[in-house]
Length: 121
Image (cartoon, rainbow, N blue to C red; front, side, top):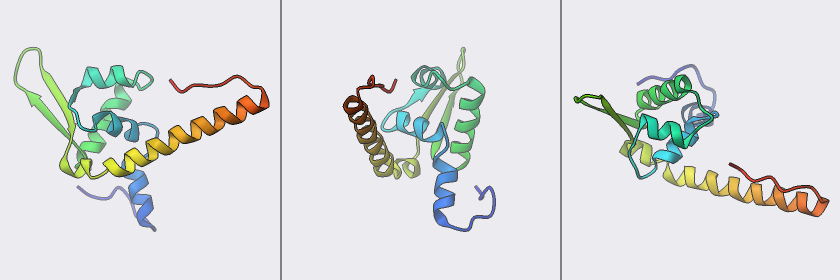
């Protein structure tokens, strides 16, 4: 495991490893459970198979996700958080809760302005 580039602040490392459009979403779906690739894809319908594969590989390289391959036909591959990945639980739950509050604030603001409410999918 090595850093991808030179960083000037530790928050840059954190954002590079766990943020972006999909990594945080993947990590949240794996909190406390193990999922197969197809199950993850169903949980995140807007992600392409190629992007899901790439993001899972990066999360595995960073030691956050464990990939277990079972030697059977058809092949079975499961993904789960490593103990190191589970260390992110408080941060992920806090970010998710903030997103929920923000969505409620935006919806409340739109209701006051007479606009239609937008619900996250």
